[in-house]
Length: 335
Image 1 (cartoon, rainbow, N blue to C red):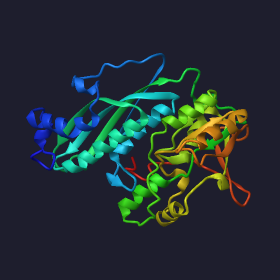
Image 2: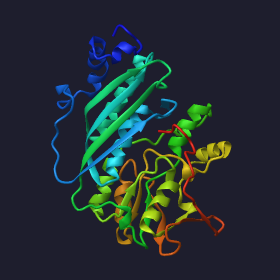
Image 3: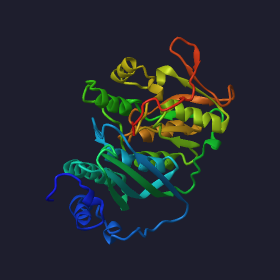
């Protein structure tokens, strides 16, 4: 391309818009559905379907282990996966600021294609708009997704009953720590990076051995604390977790200590929480630990008849403290 930065002309619908599509986006996103270049895509579905949408405004756009494009694909794939669906197709809408570097757009698009390939989905339709410099903070991305619900599953917080085991797929807070480190210039070991990942293979394996899993959730904004509170409230069960069972990297805890955060409230982009019947717990843990995104899976607590609608944490010294719902957006622009 003649230009190395996005200009307003790239969003005007003319020759330069066509050039942006043909030389930057289509080489990454091209597939038989998108190659039709129509206003929408015609796709095949069967039975019950799940449908979701989300927008991504993370700052900074690039952080250790990922970028806004990785978030956009994985976030929508994971939202579908948590409904008990096999993700099939997603859309991509981009709002790009005038002056945004073309090389950065290529990198973001390439990452999106990589994540789509790993998840086994196609980006089938989309839209690009360019706004004046200073109006979009680089780039915003919206994705919507659709998938087939796995037969025999019915994921809902209302299915949660007392006596269920609560499984967490791995270490928490890494994504928020990586983004905050990039934002505030904090140095962290290279292995502390975003956990952003497509979890569809993990959830499908879990549901294959335990289709009666009551609910699946990915603890993104608001973290583990928000998810557990939402499920406790919806099910009117008590939730009791063990502080010593919750995996947190010491470096992530250190970032939290510096900035005054609780890891339970930090966003994750590649973790899963499952409420599982006790007779299926070992089978679910076994298949999770065979998956690259579930190797650190463990039971962190259970549901109870006591304190319905509340979340408690059994502390290391033997007491129980209430884990409240977060009051607001503790770390803004995290996804």
